[in-house]
Length: 242
Length: 242
DNA sequence: CCAAAAGTGTTTCCGATACACCCATGA
DNA sequence: TCATGGGTGTATCGGAAACACTTTTGG
View 1 (cartoon, rainbow over the protein chains, first blue to last red):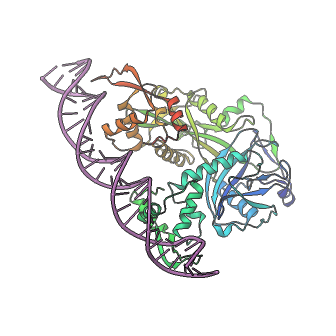
View 2 (view 1 turned 90 degrees about the horizontal axis):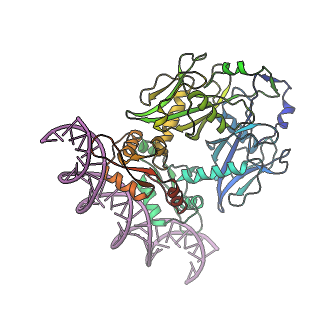
View 3 (view 1 turned 135 degrees about the vertical axis):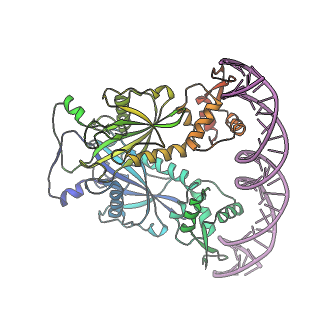
């Protein structure tokens, strides 16, 4: 969650008055990425109180009245992490009264997946420190962000089996082994190589490329996710599953 | 969505001022019930502009700063429809800028299921007209409530197959035929009677009662959902499915 | 005795699972 | 030649789907 001090410098102070009290509204992003060591989560170090010095989810206040909440999270993630064009979907809205010690804050959390090329995140224009953490070794988090992360993980694990979202964590071109280990990392269990390949290839959502990987050992055939064909299949009643 | 005029009478006018503009926050309920004719949705007739005379989802403003958003929807539904103790779960948050013509309003939508005994809804203390509509024959709805309903239906249809939420739409004691026709109404297709019974009984989440129904024709055995056993099964890795 | 709803088993088929060895490449 | 990762086929098992007649009850 962004601290508002940043913006107080930029904007001319001006007050807004309403007949009834209103909660502040924020957006927070649960941003996952995949590395060789497993599934990672992007966190931001807080530079101001409350929770100064703690790690927190990237995000910020929804205080532009002409910007949708979906746009707000996109912009905040860009400002704080320089990541653009990621897969983004609404996760859950957290609305208990005391989740922020300052005042009533309701937060719309989003779930995001980034390609490995974005794993080298620079601190964004907000100049806060951004870092990737193993999802199994997270530091203490500010606010109720541990709950938000839990919800995000639950969603990722539930979703990856029924919708082809996992591809968002891989480069455009990938090998079947990369694809399989991605599933293994997320689901937390080993899969059988032959069965996995049989199944995923039978679905017809992978387009084989005329290229080979250049990693150590034998070269592997590269594939990409065939978005067009996937959509056609869905239209004819196809359901992606595991 | 509730119109705020109701409350202006009750509260002493007093203004609330913030440094940054804030969207108003509302909650809306997509409330489903089951009748002999199929799946029904609860709507409220709007008594004031905008959309005066239109049908809309029950709901209202979140303007008590010490009440969680989850509590707000519970209270609003009770005020508007006299329904208490229903199954309630957060659905989605709608946050585009122009969904309310008056001003920026962000709405947290909830998904609710009521027992048949609650199908005789009285207008609540708000004295608005409440009525049940076939989900396939809905009137034009106020705001973006058609989108909200679409999201709710999607959720219901997706969820009913993987979690035992359907029981929330039946009386405590029900027959297997009632259970089956409930699924048929929601999923929109016929199921095989013998396969259905085999499967649902094999799961072990139904507790047979020593009572029989008293409807026309042969008497049917009554069952109830065995919540306790279901939870135990879940702990040991069981997954409810279809 | 007729209408209405309840109840009951078996066979077939397909997808899920289990399982082990050879191949290509670079060091 | 060795280490590393890539690639391939078959047999078994279990759950899903298809399918029709008898029973109980009230009118």
